[in-house]
Length: 229
Image 1 (cartoon, helix red, strand yellow):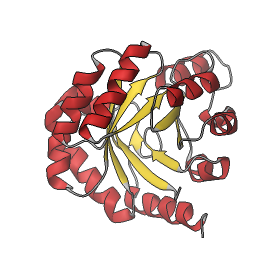
Image 2 (cartoon, rainbow, N blue to C red; image 1 turned 90 degrees about the vertical axis):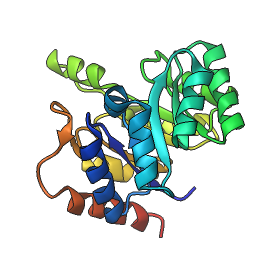
Image 3 (cartoon, rainbow, N blue to C red; image 1 turned 120 degrees about the vertical axis):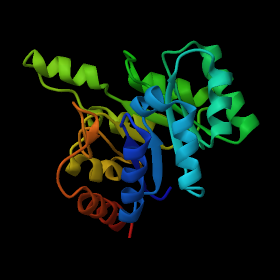
Image 4 (cartoon, helix red, strand yellow; image 1 turned 135 degrees about the vertical axis):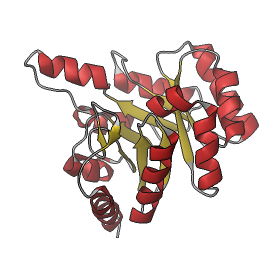
């Protein structure tokens, strides 16, 4: 598939999220993500406001669903989300419920392998259960905790090729990617390029990072698209 650039709005108020989203779309970003901090702070209201402001743009609701799968997916679909996220470490029935809700309400399901001891096997399992995408994810706490102990910080690029080769559905790599690493994701076979903390968002304060973010995003979008021409 054609590479897609997605920005994760890991912010805690809808006003800043809307401003960041508008700037990102001007720069060429394709998809918006209502990040987990935004959903925790604003709930359905945040997703609804994004949909009202950007009626034609795909919106990923990063629910990280672990239970109550059908209801959570249904609520976000009705609020305007086009994609929802369920965790591979949820019970199999929860994943099945989210997949069914996706079919019933016309939303795509992204299965996230965060925290799985075997991320490649988890990706296969998510595909078997009917997820439309795999999110290959190294978590915020995991990265920071390991680095604080003086060990090498893990990266989603470590096993990205293996995950891509294990499934037939599109893969997205998430978790502390640098600018250069994010741009390289399509080279690994992962066409869904996600930009978020700490690349475009201040990861500690959860506010827009300093600097010319729009110019940085435009550069990323141009480089990602250039890679397929």
